[in-house]
Image (cartoon, rainbow over all chains, first blue to last red; front, side, top):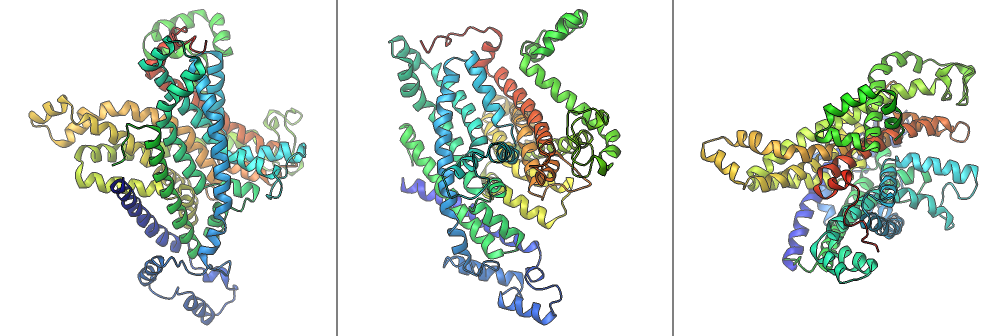
Length: 305
Length: 317
């Protein structure tokens, strides 16, 4: 157990270090913050002073060594655009992201497991065709377009839901629906495929022969054995929700980590970009380990070692 | 569904000829699946329109006519060119969609093609050689997976000029790991087989074993994945253009048109809705086709496609 966890942690941390190196140099390729934060007619002396104050006058490798040293103290430096520590700017956005990701993933699982199961119980029936078609449709709609059309229909024309903000419960509906759109289609397909395989397995047929009800067959016998691919894809998609929600933040002005990161890229706010990628990276690593632990809980044949 | 029904009685000779030609193999199965057939035809027509129609529509698409600003759709009073309405500058929506189709297809096709070739090649080598080469390549793949792909795309396209080539590169790199993992997993299993051992015994080089023995067996799986990816990459490309880092005028794809229309969403819904519909139709056709490809390749489901009643039919009772 400990051995497995430490192996997972080391390989993930190697990946994270690689990511941080790429992000560090990539961010600096976007140009100098001085040209963005100082007035157009700034003198050379002003630019020099700005760079010196923010440590941007040093050679890039020196900056990098400095950055690496600070990361070990969890110090990501000062945000240029927000005038507060970068780690604070990022961490204050995390609860919003985690909350909406958890709600969207929970609802997705709640919907896709029954849908996929009913489709698999009667393969090629009208119900199965309808569910398969529905799931393919949801994964064929561009998220941004779905969000815009929903705003047009529900907010502008019908006036039922607010276009942005997060005050009332109603304002959560459209962002959550947008976030669920693709995972719902993909997961329904995965549930259907996995269930189809287990329902044909000998032990389920055996249980059927003994006269168990289909509910018991599907949800007690088959589902548990079909759970591995479902957990894998759900974990993958949950990671995507942590990372992104960029579309949601772009259309609904949702103040999550996606919004913070995109704004940081446009503002050349290197400290926030680095802190954001680091925090998201850690969250994804933790999520992956959680997924491995759920594997072991769902399938006793998998021994974590 | 309607396509087969109207085609069959109207042109019986063609139908019979097609039947005799395609009665065997997957094409024969395709004939029996109306939805998949309709998707294949839709994609075919769209590609045809994009390749043949786009050069003609190019000039018309850029023609501005301020008197026709926000001209509503479904009216033929200004000719069929404006049947889908006009945008904020009075440009024909229909012509724009045709031009956008070509760019969207080129970007999605090139990105998927590039990712498939490079990813599969790396996966084959990685799986076959194993050892430190494999470990190093897998860590690189981990890094690509961990970097938020949208953020990577934002940063890269922010640095580089938004152009078709850069967009293709960014999308291809982001999708590499899937092909890498699929082909590597299959190679790991295949390299232990007897036929590989036999090739080695007669002195075949590593390269020729990978190329002649393993590649042909890995390709079908990889191509199924690629078909599935086509729709996804098309959506991703449109998303980037929507965020303003994908393509910019004079290069237009469907995502660009949606993001331009967004500013006039309440005034002219058609400038947003139609390009989005084009994306949905294309992605849905690609998804339906790849779903059918997967089902027909899977023995568990392929039988159900031909002979409807299966023994699971009454599992719920």
